[in-house]
Structures are given as structure tokens and as C-alpha cells.
Image (cartoon, rainbow, N blue to C red; front, side, top):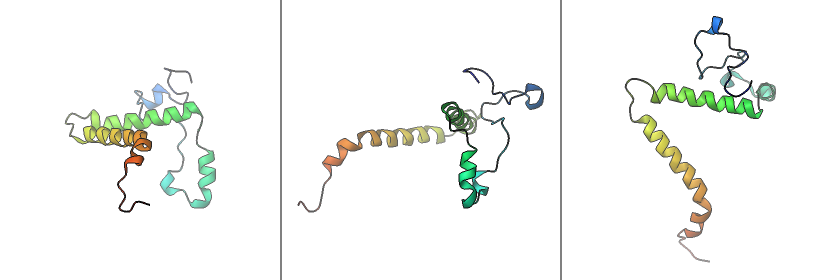
Length: 108
């Protein structure tokens, strides 16, 4: 699959209009139904290539868009989610600088 093309598994006659939030490959056992002993086999069936990971992130983004951003009546949830995500991201970026400014009760 090249950039900008439909997945190879997508068939417009069978699936109808293309939905970027849907996985068109063969259905597999959901993670919640996998037993601990079968976890390595289940992980082995995942597509961990860069294009497979990009496709997974793209589907997750579009599912989030369809649920929170694109409905007719959008609430405040997507704005709070983006704000909290940005706060966590920038905290992680600046943690190395902030850890030197801690206030300790006892100084050694």
C-alpha cells in the first residue's frame, strides 16, 4: 500500500463507502478476550511495521474524531482531552528541568 491509496483489503462493492476509522483486514480476537498464554501468539499476528503502526494510529485518530469532534452537537470533551494531552506532553518534555527545583523537607 502506497501513501494515499486504499488498503488492499478494501472492496467498495462489499464494504461501501470508505471509512478511515475501520480496519478492513481479517478480524482477530480482541485483546480483552486473549488469555495470558496466548498473548505472544496474538502479538505475533500484529503488523508492527512502520506502515502498520501508522495505520493503527490513523484509525485511532479517526475513531476519536468521529466520536468526539465531528458529531452535530459537540461538547467540551475534545477540547479538554487535547488540553490535558498537551499538558502531559509538555510536562514530560520539561521534567528534566523541573526536577532540579523540587522543595525537599530535609536537606542533606
